[in-house]
Structures are given as structure tokens and as C-alpha cells.
Image 1 (cartoon, rainbow, N blue to C red):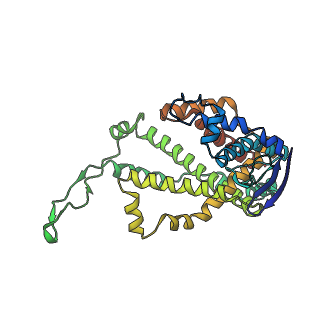
Image 2: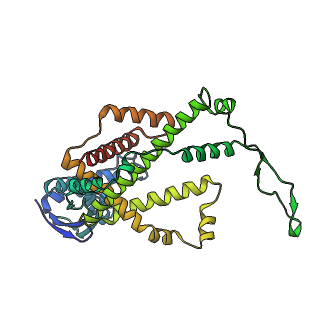
Image 3: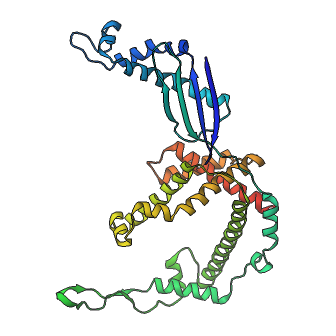
Length: 354
């Protein structure tokens, strides 16, 4: 009834070539005619109630055959993927190579698949990199200088601003001078209470010091995680499907456009200013997109190998937070995002525990 051969192509794609037997293909004739008939409007007949003989006289045979092919492949394609254990990740590109009444249906289908990934000894990589973290990096201290610099930044940011007088420029244009900070406010109990829930200067300094320490620890953790994952990416072997690279490129450019728009600029104007096209940017960010695609695949593979899954309760809590902040968010996409973030965090914690 259905005969197929599967051929592996470069860049993690496969081609399914096959034939659906003439009898099985002919079985879709009435269904295809009925479906097309629902859209045909003819004088003297109610929509969807046109007799078969009249439909045959008014619908070209090729149109019926194409509808038959679509119905047949819609039904058989998922079964082919299941039987051949093909992890398809893109819309199939379908070519019909044989299409006639009372004949087999010949077709070719090309689709991108999840690539085969050869992971390195990721536990050993993590262990080796973690062993190189120095005591100073492990036991982070906040110096008095760090504390005083941060306090000065806060005081400066709270200084009232003053406009300098406007000066006339050439061609009669008037440009305000930049704002300059006036007197920096004094660090006292009143000042720190205005900043937040602080009792006095001493309490503010203690909490600020703890905050700076936490920030430095997070930076150090991110630095170590980056070293681990970059080494795992470098030592992994895989063919990345083009579709995954393009998805990551779309994400990068979408974020870039959003950031530019939020700054009150038009993305087209920004591109003109850079003297670049969208295609130029796609070429420029391709390396980053490949790395992001590899990272997602590698983390997914490690999660499978180590049976790491996100905690359902934590996922539900995270989804609730997302939906509270973004009222229009799609709950299903929010759940996938939360699951992804929490699973990845567990993977990194697993690597850090080596």
C-alpha cells in the first residue's frame, strides 16, 4: 500500500521518497470531491448540496487530484514519521512526482530533523573548570572602596539636575545644554530612609554590602557557567539544521528591533544610520545564532541523558508570575518558557555539583 525510502541529507535534513498504492490513493476521490464541492457556488444549487455529476463537470480533474494528494499525505505523513522514528522539526517540503487517476501517488518529502548530537564528557569538563576557580573567586569579599563607590553613584544619581541657559547655535537653532548635577546630597539617616526600608546609615551600608556581594557572586557564577558551556559547545559534534539557526536569528533581530523602538527610534532609520540591511545583520549575527541553537540542543540532550526535569510546582508558580505581569501572554507559551528556564537552571546546578 505505502512504500517509502528515507535518505539522510546534509545539515540534518532527511528526504522521504515513496508511493501510495493506486487503490489506496483512489480511496480519497469521494472525500476530495466532497471537500471541493463545499466551496463551489453554482446557480440553482444550495452551497454544499451540488450533485456529484455536476461537480465533476465543473471542477478540473487536476484540482481533484491535488486535493486527493493533500488528504492522503496529511493522513500518512505523521505515520511515516512515527514508523521511521524521524524527529521532524520543520514544515515538510512536499513534491508530487506522480499524479493521475487509478495510479499510485508518487511523492518526495524533505524535512529538517533533530540532529544527532555527540556530547563530550560534560561532567569532566565541568569538574575541570570548577577546579580552576580560585579561593578569592569562591569567597568574594566587598571592599570599603567598592561600598563607597556604589554609595557615591547612588548619591550622584539622586542629585537634583539643573539646566544651563539655552545657547543659540548657527542658523538660529536653539539647543539646551546637557543637564549638570547640582550639589550631591549628604549621606545621612534621612537620605537613606528616602531610598527604601532602611533604619539608618549603618543599616543601609550593611544591606548594600550584602547586595553588592550577591551581585558579585552572581557575576562569578555566570562567568564559570559560560566557560563550562562554551567548552561543551566547542567539543560537541552535530549538524545544525538551518531552520534552528534562522529561528535564533529571528529572535535576535526581533529583540534588537524592540529595543530600538522602545528608545523611540524607527528600526528602518537605525538601519540607514548603520548603512546596513536586514540581510547584513543576519550575516553578522549568524555565529551568535548558531551558538544559541547549539546551546539549546546540548542542554536538551543533557536533560534527556541525566533525566533532569523542572519541578511542576515551581513551573506553576513561575507561570502565575508571568501571567500577572503580562496580561496578554499565552498561558501555554508561558508554561513552555517557564519549564525551559527552570530545567536549564537545574542542568547548570547539576554541572556545578560535579
